[in-house]
Image (cartoon, rainbow, N blue to C red; front, side, top):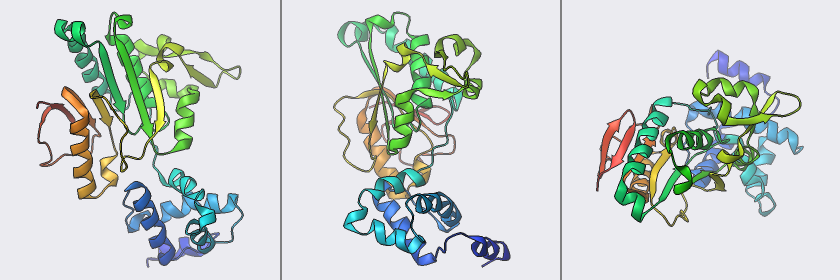
Length: 287
C-alpha cells in the first residue's frame, strides 16, 4: 500500500476492507454487468459512505450484511444508483447529432418509406438524467420539416431510477444551456422557474420522449426495430464477453440502414458483423 493510499485509509470515516470491496463489486457486477477494478475502491467508498451515513449504519461490514439479507433487497437499487456513473450534458459529442440530422432527412426524403412506414423510432439506451434524449428530440424537431406527418418516438432507458426521475421532470440548471448549440436556444426550453436558475424543456420535445427503467443485461421488452440507437460510453464498463453480447443485441434491434452511435473511447474491434463504419464511432446496419 502506498503512503498516499495508507493516508487516505487512515482518514476514512468508515473502515473498508478489501474483502468488503470484493463483495460489493461482485454484487455490482451481478446486478449491472459493470466491472470495477482495484482502482475503483476509493470511488466505491466515496459513493457508498454517503449511503451508509444516510441509513445510520456503523460501517461497510454492516452494509454488506444488509445487502445480503432478505431485508436488504430494497437497498440493491440504492446501491446501483450510487455506483452507476452518470456523466452527461446536452449535445455531448455533437458530431453524432449532426449525423443523426442527416440520417433523419434521408429517411423523410425516402418516398417509399414515407408512404409505407411513417414510424421513426430512436432509442437512447443509457439516457442518464435525460440530456441525451432531449438533445435527440431537438435534433428531430429541427431536422424533420413536416414532423406532424411522421410518428416519431424516442425511448430513453437507464438503470438508475434517480436519473430517470430527473429526465421525467425535465428541469435543468440554467448553466446547462451553455452546452446547447445557439441555433436551438430559443426552442429547447419553454421558460425558467421563478428562481431563474432552472430551465424547463419545451413541451413539444418532452412529448417525444418516454422514460423507462431497463437493465441492459436483462431481457429487452422491445417490439420494434430502431432507426437509431445511442449507447455511448457504456461498453467501457463491461468485460469483453458482455460487450460482444450487447453489440450483437443492438445489431438485432436495429432496422436495416439504422445507425448505432457509440462513445468516443469505444471500439467494436472485430465485432462489426452486419455493420459499416460511416463516421466517428458511428455504424450503419447494412444487412
